[in-house]
Image (cartoon, rainbow, N blue to C red):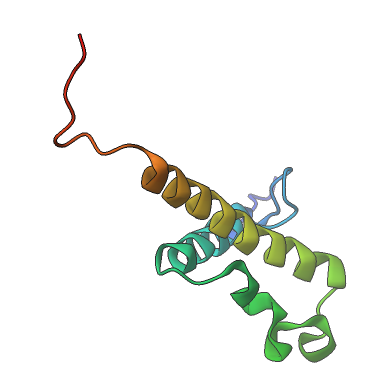
Amino acid sequence: MKRRSTSGQDSALPNQKGGLPTAERAELQRQGAKAAARGEECGVNPMDEQPNRPSTTGECPDVWQRRKDAWQEGHDVQSRTDDHANTRPSQRGEKDDH
């Protein structure tokens, strides 16, 4: 019986949720979150730039859309977190009414 080689290809398999490898999806989300933390608007998604579009890369439009969505998801989550943090009342200098 031949033994199957595991050359790290398992990490390149798409996950069930997003259709992208888990590590790639996480990295795109991280990049989107970092862009939001820097204050960049959601319209700066690098997947929209011409060098990253399917017409240039030759990749499947569905895969491109999944990458674009992963970046956007990371940006959106960070933006909501930042917005929530900015709308909370300051804890300093407030009296406790109790």
